[in-house]
Length: 518
Length: 97
Image 1 (cartoon, one colour):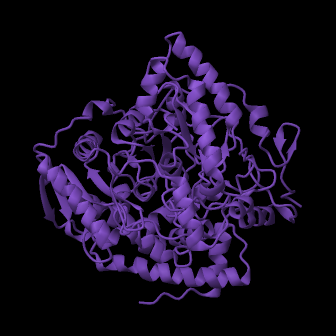
Image 2 (tube, helix red, strand yellow; image 1 turned 180 degrees about the vertical axis):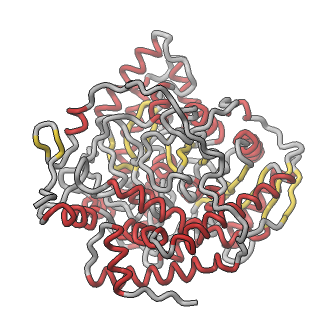
Image 3 (cartoon, helix red, strand yellow; image 1 turned 60 degrees about the vertical axis):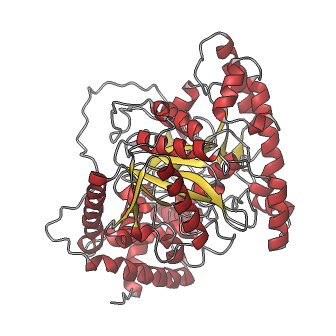
């Protein structure tokens, strides 16, 4: 239990000092995962044997003085849309239920170079399409703070795994809020970097112009350290940017003096849960007391971000997901007549309803006759939204608001009305359209014990400004909202509320022939 | 402005999307799409005349490099994922009669 309460950097330090072995750290995380998984279901694959093999190798390198970084020996988890050579990578979809990539994603490669031990692949909304991790083919993930509720999505497995202590940090991906929103719901720190900061090589594409990989961590220092480890210029990703600064941990400064922070009026208005509003405003006050100047202002076009986003993301998804056709990898339908019938049956059986919905919408907005009216209109709107942010960042260093309008909804309450679910993305989505960095920090809990997150948005390449503000907030409040979830208590509450038996749900998610090794 | 998706349109989009939808799925898809398009139509409140469509937020240029092979022979590994293979090729149903 003691090991589990350490942050990634604290653990790394103790491993370096020889107080804890890498094997011991991996054992602690695996034991915890085995205890938590029947209820939480954070992992699609928990790779116990692989983790211990890596641990041995990493330990040798640490002992030989070859690995000296702060994350050497730290057990981490990877969202299941990032390729790892030879390891099942499903995107939480049936269509990739047997896919073992022939190469490893650059971000994962970078983490391995830093000496992190990868203990498993985390659950997600199928192809990262969803806000609750309920669209996974491998069953939903549950919120470790209250298992009657969802963890958010689409990186729900990564955020739940960190919150439940099933790993010491994780990678997620964020196309419209998929790191920031589940981080908010699970009470962990998550960061979506500026577009192009982390290589997308080996990330299975959803909306290529919007997708970014980023860290999910226990606290702000860990988050900065993980970002520093994974960010790089990668010639294999043509949109990767060669940045001047990758030393994100240098921004861990307890000082918000002179920071100009703007709160958009439209982020605090209708539809925002009063408890969330109160917690976020209280957090802004803390930054003000620590020297920041906080004002409210009008950020234009907020309500147009969602329609523009769903047009663009669906269009890109319909194109990106063409490749899943049952020819080169993945699932192929059993019986078919001819090539086209094989494609259609494979895809219809292999994709879930939310993925089909977005492929259909995307195919429609790109079809001749509608391309200008929908797709190009959305791209023009995107240009206007970017301009609004440019204007705001002439005055402000940071835009502050909530990450989501509410805390985590109950399981089973979101999928019946997709449009309503999409509206929950209002505060996160425009950040992807504009390519900006955004970060979520836990700032409180509601009356049901569910975490509340504050979102900090920065100008392009200003991750350090966000990290500095987040760190200052954390220092001032003593990390009081960043404690590990008590899964026993959470499950008790959950079982009572839903009348569901935790063991039954765990059994249901088992898929024959699937590599779950819990 | 309420959007109305016809049977022909849903059929056509299904072909573009390479998806085979049952009759119920088609009806659901029509309803979903109509609702989403009505919502997307709020963009028409914005005057975007003279605004260039923005595909990428940062300027994206062609990246050139010498055409030198850096990866090795991954044939076996790649084919290991094939749902069906014939010797060193992916096998698909006959496409020409």
